[in-house]
Length: 114
Image (tube, rainbow, N blue to C red; front, side, top):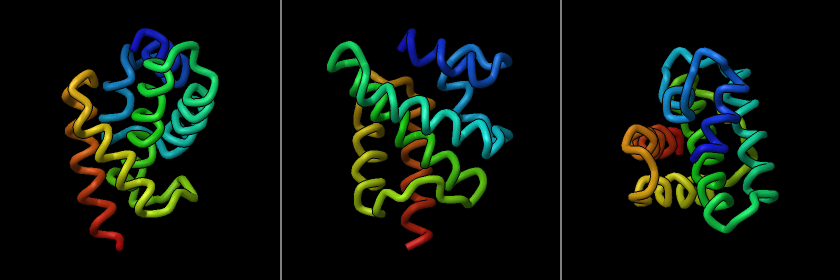
């Protein structure tokens, strides 16, 4: 999570952690797009399998936050792929609880948009 937090602070220096960044309902859509792109890249280039797993969860969280806070879809992922990603985040006990809660709410927003 240290790398993810460092990247979040780079996106928005007012946020110390990725959980603070992605769970803030006032986050701009532009910053959510940046977060999605950063964590998408980390998902592929992460040094370890754990890094890549964290990044996949944060990629889904970024998309879920855009749906939840802005009613915007910032990905071309299918509904079923987004559902799987958010469900994976929600079930991952290693992820901070605020992000798991975001995943639950994002699933509700996704299901409402179907």
